[in-house]
Length: 92
Image (tube, rainbow, N blue to C red; front, side, top):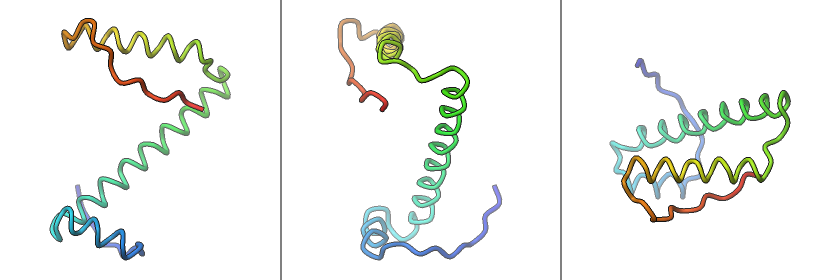
């Protein structure tokens, strides 16, 4: 992927904290990954909004059923039968 240098303004304390954690050479990669993740979240949010406009909001019962199915699939594919995974917060 081609790259281009941009100038952005960041809170100094945050930028220095990240630079200490990842090193000067890892700073650009860290910021790039953060921007990629935010962009993915924005796209998913747009998709959710379109689907909710077309089909209505997902009910708590539907969320619970989907979470139960996810846990069962996780147990099936990881072999951790009987082990309860982390419960994810409900969407609001």
